[in-house]
Image (spheres, chains in turn cyan, orange, blue, yellow):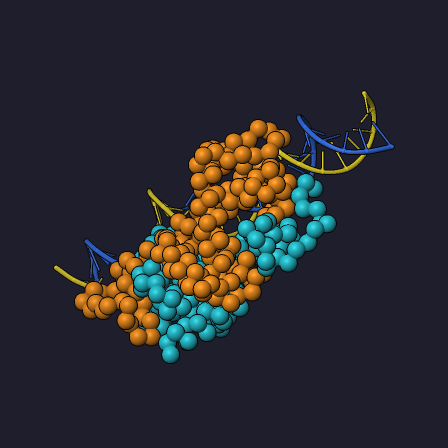
Length: 158
Length: 158
DNA sequence: CAAATAGTTTAGCCTTGGCTAAGAATGTTG
DNA sequence: CAACATTCTTAGCCAAGGCTAAACTATTTG
């Protein structure tokens, strides 16, 4: 171990010039991000399927491919995974549907997404940029931050 | 093509209940996120190496492994990639150093990271949460949003 | 209703980023 | 300075998420 002797310990909130956080905390930051990455894509698919079902009445592989800018083969493979995870049900060559669990995930994702998007707009970011950033950020925002964003947005609207 | 006939077109900024964005825009959102993911890890490594060099004087593979909560083998493999990308220089069994390009990347990443972190704190998020969220968010925040965040933080400090 | 078009799936490939296990190099210490 | 501990690398494995090409199913249309 060449790192971090623990003789000195400071309140991390007030370190000037932002020194390195203690190893454990630092490690947890990265682990959390890695973890988010695993579910991220899944959530994006489920969220999009939910949106398509809601706004179009059906969710076809071709639509998903177009909207994600990805090949149909990729979508097909992904649908198999979503099936295994019991998030969607599908019959070959037919539209997709969400299971209970899938619907729940879609709603949660959609809600997070909207909170982030509305927050960015309330902050003054223009719509197109806000949409892109929200898409990337939504999976990395904790519940605490999400709540703070929501509060801010509401306050702004008054 | 089963999706989006373009007969109707609305100003996307003002759709009530947040309808689906037009395919092209939607596709670009996802493409941007996918793109960010490719460079994300690279940037995290470079940023961390920069921080270790700055605060500890050297950057050893073991430290990186500990701080990233990843095996040494993974770090070793990654260092080979960073070498190929000419972001770091390294001699076997010795500390790492950043190339010019590496240093530039480290600085940029660090700056983005700090802006996001300080913004979250200014918004009222507690330190530990802010650190975790900043780590995840930093790669998904556009320059425009970054500028907005910075402005907000400065205003808050007055 | 047959043929053409559109949509879906499968097979097989590639890269990334993890892992463990084993061995080589370096550093430390009795 | 030899033995032990630590650090680093290599080899070989795996899963995820892309891709293209080819085959199959469904839908539309002349």
